[in-house]
Image 1 (cartoon, helix red, strand yellow):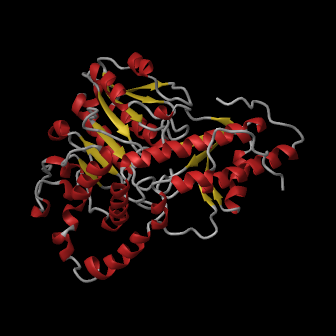
Image 2: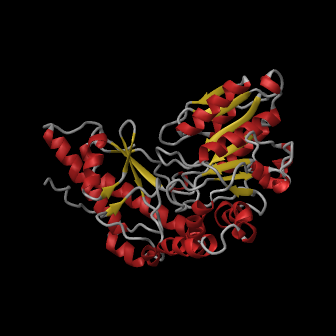
Image 3: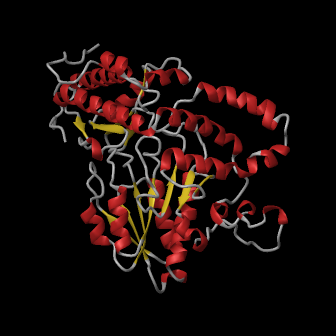
Length: 432
């Protein structure tokens, strides 16, 4: 085995000392242990399950479902997409009640809200009024694909922002493309590749100055960074619940629509759960008042249960404390990479300013596609993003500093083996 470079003098605190001083350390015991995993570095893709959720699901089968049966729709289930949405809004999103709903997947909710916004700000086919959509070329594929599909459906133009791959969309870049023809801007608060954290309030204000609406994708930020949707004047937002929110694989997403827009937005997937009188079985669709109008089909009740447990934990820990630990973990990862990996050609592809950095760190190296499955086989679980990025996703409530350091050591060893097997040092070791 090729050893990682010996530590040199560093201002970085020892990982064990940081774990001992961690005010959130007690919460790690709340998660189900992962047998064979020594370093889970993919909490920004899929959060670990809570022990409480395992108990909750058993209780649900015996009680709400098994005993109450269909009566639970009247007891609780019918309103759960809205009540859980309000709780999510209060604990994580900075949203007053009546503006958030939990339902569907991220892709479906993006389609619903983008189409609703487009139809409210353009005439049929975009023949008059606002007829342009704005999105950055590096945004998550789903966001881009949905935008392109709706543009094709409605005869609209897409204006692309070519943003810096590390730092993301800059204010001046958005200001250069939004104008009187812009219907909607779609941006991600945290870049899924680099972890760049955008200034939601500033960019929203720029779009509003041009008369455009803005939809924010919160998938890589909700539960990891503070969010104040109401205070920032956000129009629309969508996010998933299976990353930092711990909802589990395939857990339903959430949608936020500011109260000032709800009455004029008509979502395109008209289903019975979004009707004004759900059980009237009416001949024609009449949308409900408020956030219920953004529902379509029967809500995924079982998929909402883990999110309830996770919100309890997040509320107990506090979003500000979670953010403080996230900053410390990502700073540790960047410092460690500078000290031990830069000489092997590994570059940091994440903003170094913590105010501009979300909850994960991305490292770049030509070996990462090859070594990622080898790391997984060792119980070290980061994830790879094309073309050469390795994401280190540390979830503050379930991750520790010693675990993070062990994962980084294994990554360093794998890079050194890869480099040695080729008989040369990879060029380009200067950090970004």
